[in-house]
Image 1 (cartoon, one colour):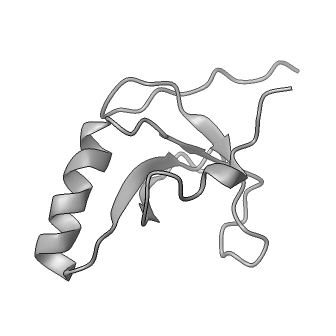
Image 2 (image 1 turned 90 degrees about the vertical axis):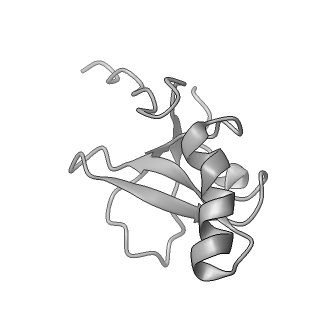
Length: 90
């Protein structure tokens, strides 16, 4: 069986990366596809949106569940947050 193609972020067109959810999370899949492009418009405008609506310094990254196809924001608090859970290609 071949590895499925990496999806592209619908907001910026960059290739998404495999990201491993924490063991104690509610995600049931082994990984999510996440856009780690710091210039992605979704991520960039998220900083202003979260400050205006929630009064918090945070943003979000586009994520995609490979099992269900559902898309959702992955909350983040810095450019480096979550990068330690990227699953590198073998």
